[in-house]
Image 1 (cartoon, rainbow, N blue to C red):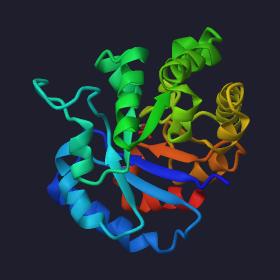
Image 2 (cartoon, rainbow, N blue to C red; image 1 turned 45 degrees about the horizontal axis):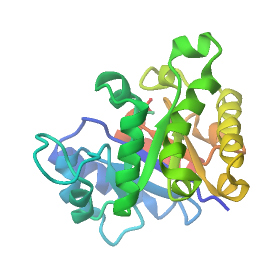
Image 3 (spheres, rainbow, N blue to C red; image 1 turned 180 degrees about the horizontal axis):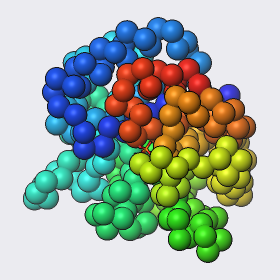
Image 4 (tube, rainbow, N blue to C red; image 1 turned 90 degrees about the vertical axis):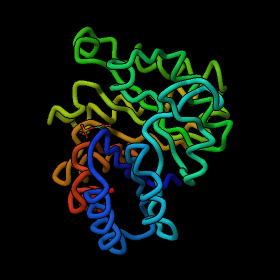
Length: 250
Ligand code: PEP
């Protein structure tokens, strides 16, 4: 039984006061969502302390958007896994397409970040997905398999057992273009089958989120697909009502 997860990736947005306002709105409505869906937010690093203060003792989880693969030391501008644990993060996103395309994170770097997170006891949310040009060339499965295999080779299928996967077609992120439920389902089923080549039970238990312009108006039809176990939500997660409507859709 996979409990859907609705995860809000705030990206580099917000302020201290908007963080307080957004979390107040989410906390106010979360009671109506029920125990069948898990919700978590992913603020910028600097707001983690405030998020912990405001969400501690609630059913809403939190995590970071990125982490270093290094142990604490001379790595200016980086944040170590131990620092995320100081703020009681449960999750950390690794390999978001913006990290891959804008900051040059390769499959190997992402795999090392995944390993560091897992070693620290954090749950990695591994983002994978193809560019528009790759979809048009018909290599979506090849790309997703390569990104997944980089982690499987380093961590084994046991590593995935403790993780969440987010399929995020890059052409749908922040563009307003959403994959159709059928397009998303096709890739989610492929990801699960790829995991099942290693271990059928782990494949069946792994949560695979969809990300890419999920909104209150399209969440329910996306999440109705059998291999979609919730969503990684960017823009719409900055509005409490939208985020809650998406969670209801799960
Ligand atoms: C994301 O940032 O992971 C994302 C899916 O963004 P958006 O929902 O805005 O497309």
